[in-house]
Image 1 (tube, rainbow, N blue to C red):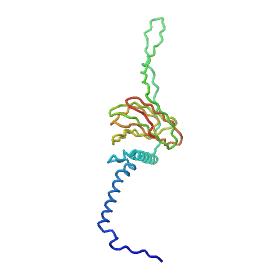
Image 2 (tube, helix red, strand yellow):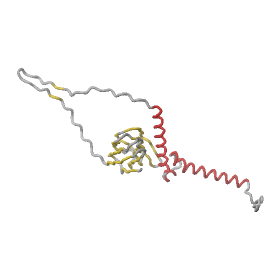
Image 3 (tube, helix red, strand yellow):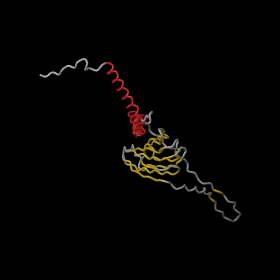
Image 4 (cartoon, rainbow, N blue to C red):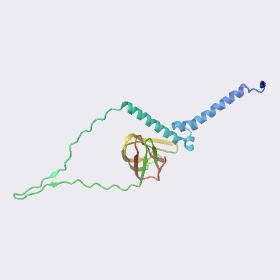
Length: 224
Protein backbone atom coordinates (compact mmCIF):
# COMPACT_ATOMS: atom_id res chain seq x y z
CA UNK A 1 0.00 0.00 0.00
CA UNK A 2 1.40 3.40 -1.03
CA UNK A 3 1.59 6.09 1.61
CA UNK A 4 2.10 9.71 0.61
CA UNK A 5 5.04 11.50 2.12
CA UNK A 6 4.23 13.87 4.93
CA UNK A 7 5.14 17.50 4.05
CA UNK A 8 8.05 18.96 5.91
CA UNK A 9 7.60 21.87 8.31
CA UNK A 10 9.22 24.21 5.77
CA UNK A 11 6.61 23.27 3.15
CA UNK A 12 3.67 24.14 5.40
CA UNK A 13 2.27 27.72 5.12
CA UNK A 14 3.17 30.01 7.97
CA UNK A 15 0.62 31.56 10.31
CA UNK A 16 1.20 34.95 8.67
CA UNK A 17 0.37 33.54 5.22
CA UNK A 18 -2.78 31.89 6.53
CA UNK A 19 -3.92 35.15 8.16
CA UNK A 20 -3.16 37.13 5.00
CA UNK A 21 -5.07 34.62 2.83
CA UNK A 22 -8.04 34.78 5.20
CA UNK A 23 -8.08 38.59 5.10
CA UNK A 24 -7.87 38.65 1.28
CA UNK A 25 -10.71 36.11 1.02
CA UNK A 26 -12.86 38.15 3.38
CA UNK A 27 -12.22 41.34 1.38
CA UNK A 28 -13.10 39.60 -1.92
CA UNK A 29 -16.28 38.18 -0.39
CA UNK A 30 -17.27 41.64 0.89
CA UNK A 31 -16.66 43.21 -2.54
CA UNK A 32 -18.79 40.53 -4.24
CA UNK A 33 -21.52 41.02 -1.64
CA UNK A 34 -21.69 44.80 -2.15
CA UNK A 35 -21.12 44.93 -5.92
CA UNK A 36 -23.00 41.80 -7.08
CA UNK A 37 -25.20 40.07 -4.50
CA UNK A 38 -26.88 43.15 -2.96
CA UNK A 39 -27.87 44.75 -6.33
CA UNK A 40 -29.01 41.44 -7.88
CA UNK A 41 -30.99 40.17 -4.89
CA UNK A 42 -32.12 43.26 -2.95
CA UNK A 43 -31.82 46.15 -5.49
CA UNK A 44 -29.31 47.84 -3.16
CA UNK A 45 -26.44 49.41 -5.11
CA UNK A 46 -24.22 51.59 -2.88
CA UNK A 47 -21.29 51.49 -5.33
CA UNK A 48 -23.19 51.96 -8.61
CA UNK A 49 -21.50 48.88 -10.10
CA UNK A 50 -24.74 46.90 -10.06
CA UNK A 51 -26.49 49.50 -12.26
CA UNK A 52 -23.60 49.38 -14.75
CA UNK A 53 -23.73 45.57 -14.85
CA UNK A 54 -27.53 45.49 -15.17
CA UNK A 55 -27.92 43.70 -11.83
CA UNK A 56 -29.85 46.39 -9.96
CA UNK A 57 -32.83 46.24 -12.33
CA UNK A 58 -32.95 42.48 -11.86
CA UNK A 59 -32.99 43.01 -8.09
CA UNK A 60 -35.80 45.57 -8.40
CA UNK A 61 -37.92 43.08 -10.29
CA UNK A 62 -37.23 40.39 -7.67
CA UNK A 63 -38.27 42.79 -4.92
CA UNK A 64 -41.45 43.68 -6.81
CA UNK A 65 -42.33 40.01 -7.16
CA UNK A 66 -41.60 39.40 -3.47
CA UNK A 67 -43.76 42.38 -2.45
CA UNK A 68 -46.61 41.18 -4.67
CA UNK A 69 -46.44 37.65 -3.27
CA UNK A 70 -46.44 38.93 0.31
CA UNK A 71 -49.34 41.29 -0.40
CA UNK A 72 -51.36 38.50 -2.03
CA UNK A 73 -50.77 36.21 0.94
CA UNK A 74 -51.77 38.93 3.41
CA UNK A 75 -54.88 39.71 1.39
CA UNK A 76 -55.98 36.07 1.46
CA UNK A 77 -55.59 35.95 5.25
CA UNK A 78 -57.43 39.19 5.94
CA UNK A 79 -59.98 39.15 3.11
CA UNK A 80 -63.50 40.22 4.14
CA UNK A 81 -66.66 40.53 2.06
CA UNK A 82 -66.84 43.90 0.36
CA UNK A 83 -69.65 46.22 1.36
CA UNK A 84 -72.61 46.45 -0.99
CA UNK A 85 -72.63 49.57 -3.11
CA UNK A 86 -75.28 52.09 -2.22
CA UNK A 87 -77.73 52.97 -4.94
CA UNK A 88 -77.74 56.64 -5.72
CA UNK A 89 -80.91 58.33 -6.95
CA UNK A 90 -80.84 59.21 -10.59
CA UNK A 91 -80.24 62.87 -11.22
CA UNK A 92 -82.54 64.78 -13.50
CA UNK A 93 -81.68 67.77 -15.60
CA UNK A 94 -83.21 71.07 -14.43
CA UNK A 95 -86.29 72.15 -16.31
CA UNK A 96 -86.94 75.77 -17.06
CA UNK A 97 -90.62 76.69 -17.06
CA UNK A 98 -91.61 79.32 -19.57
CA UNK A 99 -94.29 81.89 -18.78
CA UNK A 100 -97.51 81.02 -20.57
CA UNK A 101 -100.06 83.55 -21.74
CA UNK A 102 -103.75 82.71 -21.48
CA UNK A 103 -104.94 80.39 -24.23
CA UNK A 104 -101.46 79.39 -25.35
CA UNK A 105 -99.45 76.24 -24.66
CA UNK A 106 -95.73 76.46 -23.89
CA UNK A 107 -93.53 73.39 -23.74
CA UNK A 108 -90.90 73.29 -20.98
CA UNK A 109 -87.28 73.90 -22.06
CA UNK A 110 -84.70 71.39 -20.85
CA UNK A 111 -81.30 72.87 -19.99
CA UNK A 112 -78.58 70.90 -21.80
CA UNK A 113 -75.17 70.44 -20.15
CA UNK A 114 -72.24 72.13 -21.93
CA UNK A 115 -70.34 69.91 -24.34
CA UNK A 116 -67.12 68.53 -22.94
CA UNK A 117 -63.91 69.69 -24.59
CA UNK A 118 -62.32 67.04 -26.81
CA UNK A 119 -59.17 65.44 -25.40
CA UNK A 120 -55.95 65.77 -27.43
CA UNK A 121 -54.72 62.77 -29.38
CA UNK A 122 -52.53 60.19 -27.67
CA UNK A 123 -48.89 60.20 -28.71
CA UNK A 124 -48.30 56.44 -28.31
CA UNK A 125 -50.49 53.39 -27.78
CA UNK A 126 -49.27 49.86 -26.99
CA UNK A 127 -51.26 46.67 -26.51
CA UNK A 128 -49.99 43.40 -25.00
CA UNK A 129 -51.63 40.15 -23.83
CA UNK A 130 -50.54 38.89 -20.39
CA UNK A 131 -51.07 35.23 -19.50
CA UNK A 132 -51.71 34.24 -15.83
CA UNK A 133 -48.62 35.09 -13.78
CA UNK A 134 -46.90 36.97 -16.64
CA UNK A 135 -45.45 40.46 -16.17
CA UNK A 136 -44.27 43.24 -18.48
CA UNK A 137 -42.63 46.65 -18.14
CA UNK A 138 -42.86 49.86 -20.18
CA UNK A 139 -40.53 52.83 -19.76
CA UNK A 140 -40.28 56.38 -21.11
CA UNK A 141 -37.04 58.36 -21.38
CA UNK A 142 -37.73 61.66 -19.58
CA UNK A 143 -35.83 64.70 -18.35
CA UNK A 144 -36.19 65.91 -14.77
CA UNK A 145 -39.46 67.83 -14.32
CA UNK A 146 -40.98 66.58 -17.59
CA UNK A 147 -44.64 65.55 -17.46
CA UNK A 148 -46.35 62.75 -19.40
CA UNK A 149 -50.07 61.99 -19.36
CA UNK A 150 -51.15 58.35 -19.40
CA UNK A 151 -54.19 56.10 -19.49
CA UNK A 152 -53.99 52.33 -19.19
CA UNK A 153 -56.72 49.74 -18.99
CA UNK A 154 -56.63 45.99 -18.43
CA UNK A 155 -59.29 44.25 -20.53
CA UNK A 156 -60.42 40.87 -19.19
CA UNK A 157 -59.41 41.33 -15.56
CA UNK A 158 -57.40 43.52 -13.14
CA UNK A 159 -53.61 43.59 -12.78
CA UNK A 160 -50.98 44.59 -10.23
CA UNK A 161 -48.80 47.58 -11.13
CA UNK A 162 -45.80 49.57 -9.92
CA UNK A 163 -45.14 53.05 -11.33
CA UNK A 164 -41.41 53.72 -10.88
CA UNK A 165 -38.29 55.32 -12.33
CA UNK A 166 -34.52 54.83 -12.43
CA UNK A 167 -31.47 56.53 -13.88
CA UNK A 168 -28.13 58.03 -12.91
CA UNK A 169 -27.84 55.73 -9.91
CA UNK A 170 -31.25 56.85 -8.57
CA UNK A 171 -34.52 54.95 -8.29
CA UNK A 172 -38.05 55.81 -7.14
CA UNK A 173 -41.45 54.15 -6.78
CA UNK A 174 -44.27 56.62 -7.47
CA UNK A 175 -47.29 54.37 -6.87
CA UNK A 176 -48.24 50.71 -6.46
CA UNK A 177 -51.60 49.00 -6.86
CA UNK A 178 -53.14 45.52 -6.62
CA UNK A 179 -56.18 44.29 -8.52
CA UNK A 180 -56.59 47.48 -10.58
CA UNK A 181 -58.37 47.42 -13.94
CA UNK A 182 -57.71 51.02 -15.07
CA UNK A 183 -55.71 54.12 -14.17
CA UNK A 184 -55.02 57.53 -15.68
CA UNK A 185 -53.16 60.68 -14.70
CA UNK A 186 -49.90 62.59 -15.12
CA UNK A 187 -46.40 61.28 -14.39
CA UNK A 188 -43.77 63.93 -13.51
CA UNK A 189 -40.15 62.76 -13.67
CA UNK A 190 -38.34 63.22 -10.35
CA UNK A 191 -34.99 63.00 -12.17
CA UNK A 192 -33.63 62.37 -15.66
CA UNK A 193 -33.84 58.71 -16.66
CA UNK A 194 -36.37 55.97 -17.42
CA UNK A 195 -39.86 56.24 -15.93
CA UNK A 196 -42.83 53.93 -16.45
CA UNK A 197 -44.83 50.94 -15.24
CA UNK A 198 -44.40 47.29 -14.32
CA UNK A 199 -47.57 45.22 -14.76
CA UNK A 200 -48.32 41.63 -13.66
CA UNK A 201 -51.40 39.48 -14.27
CA UNK A 202 -52.20 37.69 -11.01
CA UNK A 203 -55.50 36.32 -12.31
CA UNK A 204 -56.28 32.91 -13.76
CA UNK A 205 -57.04 34.01 -17.32
CA UNK A 206 -55.42 36.10 -20.06
CA UNK A 207 -55.85 39.88 -19.99
CA UNK A 208 -55.13 42.49 -22.65
CA UNK A 209 -53.25 45.55 -21.37
CA UNK A 210 -53.65 48.79 -23.34
CA UNK A 211 -51.33 51.73 -22.47
CA UNK A 212 -51.71 55.21 -24.02
CA UNK A 213 -49.29 58.10 -23.39
CA UNK A 214 -48.58 61.66 -24.49
CA UNK A 215 -46.41 64.50 -23.25
CA UNK A 216 -42.74 65.37 -22.76
CA UNK A 217 -40.77 62.17 -23.21
CA UNK A 218 -38.31 60.87 -25.75
CA UNK A 219 -39.30 57.24 -26.31
CA UNK A 220 -41.79 54.69 -24.98
CA UNK A 221 -40.37 51.16 -25.10
CA UNK A 222 -41.15 47.75 -23.66
CA UNK A 223 -38.33 46.74 -21.28
CA UNK A 224 -39.69 43.26 -20.44
